[in-house]
Length: 411
Image 1 (tube, rainbow, N blue to C red):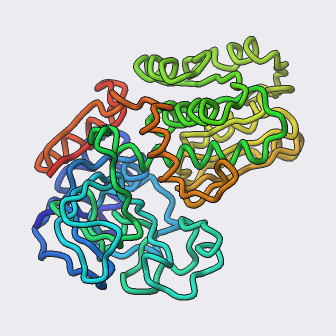
Image 2: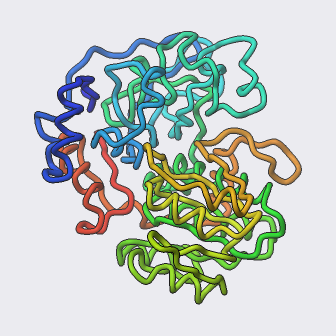
Image 3: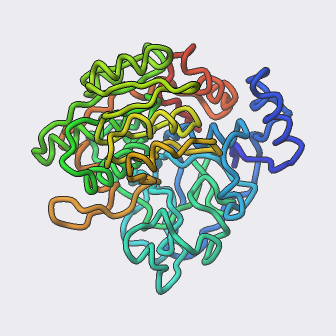
């Protein structure tokens, strides 16, 4: 079997990190961290596991951050190598363990990649898993598989960027027949966005306005998730603004439900001032001081600039939600202190409060898609065979030039 794997190497990491800005193709060159490799078939870690053949697997912003050596090293101690990339997966079940009851051979499924205590077969589960916060598992190095936060970052599971992978039956959700693969592959990132939206709405006090900073895939899906939740629950729609860098992202943001989309860059602050009624004051240096602003800001980038903008544009007592995977930005927290903001991390998914019950995020996402509360058709803009993984990665990295939203690979 084949898979696009990480080659852990200090000199490769430093080469990509130092040369990447001036030579963007270095990350997919022979000097980079990735290679398409032949490897022996993966074993099923226990009778509760299944073997999957990917139909389609997405390229996530977190994957690109690792590939370009820009990601935080926070999770490197709880990752096992070599691992095969790919955690946004729609796949066919091709083999089931002797104890599997949830799925059968031939089922089309999506994978919830979090490698929680239930996946690791640890009993009793850690406090986070027991509460349904599976993505925040505290035992990421224990159990029947090696260290790893998610499928696609663990040597024993494989990933979607390969010919096959293995998964615990607890990770699998059957895909409704009406959903195309191009929609199903978005269930994982849509669940991330849905989790962020539900967390924000649970703590924000009578919000009226929200802002999404960054309209890559996760930003666009955050817009879609907010509007889907409003439709499904009868909640009064928020005034929703978005900041988007590229023209195709601006078009998608409006199509998915943003009331007004502001181009990123110079003029952004003035445009948001006109939309929100906030007041701008200019210090001796740096960005404007914002008095007023919006109730909820979703930072869907995670950069130094986007986090700084997010805390500035959140009104006093408002909520900042960090959705985009942050690297190691240096941000002035003066706005957070002065305006008494609440900052929420929104990582992955778990169990949510939904219609008075506790429901897994993936189940909510699939229900919203099946019921037509959200339409994600067209967001998969590019599809490449596995052999063209370098081209796929470069297409995703150069979204402004290629018009990419979600780039996918297929074996």
